[in-house]
Image (tube, rainbow, N blue to C red; front, top):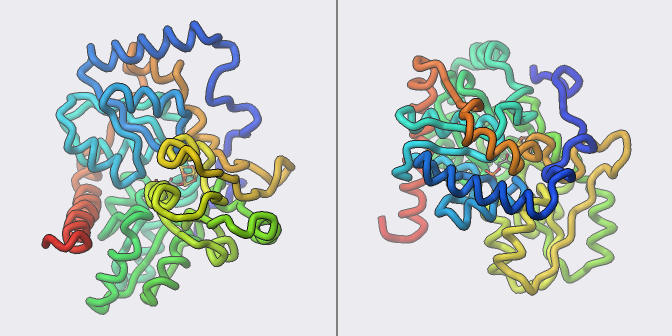
Length: 353
Ligand code: 13P
Ligand code: SF4
């Protein structure tokens, strides 16, 4: 059902540089200063994902923006009083911001920043999948289009997927899941829920290699292994912690080990190092810089966010997110359910519900 990788185009990582080499330090400093001034002039706030370049993460830190996982990006954008949200990440993150805040202007450094999960789950094929399973509750990953969210009952991100599906399971619901097959498989194993899975994958996390990881673990026996659940099952099974990007950063900060093998996009190291400067971070092995490696632990679409494109969108406003209003309203129901569940879950976990 899912589109194979060959059916959509993945930018070659080698041709993408997250920071333009033609910019010297003075030019980078000037662009940074210009971006900061434009954020203020435009009443805009920068909402960045952990996978974008550290130069953008730093601007978000220094201007009162946020650097977060996809759940927190959604929440922060909705609650922030700025009239313009500048979302540095991939398109579904900008669209989620627009779903939740239609009254705000949502800009992105580039609308070309896609996601293989979103591209591999076209709305028409997803609708047909739903129609084959009318008795199931459709739970979709946030890494999908507005149209797919509009066809669904619940949206989830990796930080809330397991408790939300557990809750549905306890109500006797059977689940239809899309699009990431590894995350779906992980949720099914964790919850024991009855789940039918779409066959999509992330071009970055699908590259982590279990055999090579075993070897690396032998070389670093004291290291804890941190894995994002979009990774293949054999990689997840070797993990000490499986979690969303923010959960993996918290693990580096809170766990006693001084070494960590990290199976997720390597731009997350910026925040991990900040959280625990004395700890050693080691990249989990991918398919290697060979013909099979399309990502090499850095998302080729996240890499399209850079100082130049960020300055350009703030200056000219060209890369703005617009969504169909009818679809937005339908997608809002499924997305708002996630935010409401996450808020209630947080209260339950903190014990103050
Ligand atoms: P998080 O929600 O964990 O930040 O993941 C988003 C994503 O696209 C991971 O590849
Ligand atoms: Fe999509 Fe994977 Fe990139 Fe995340 S890392 S945005 S799941 S392609």
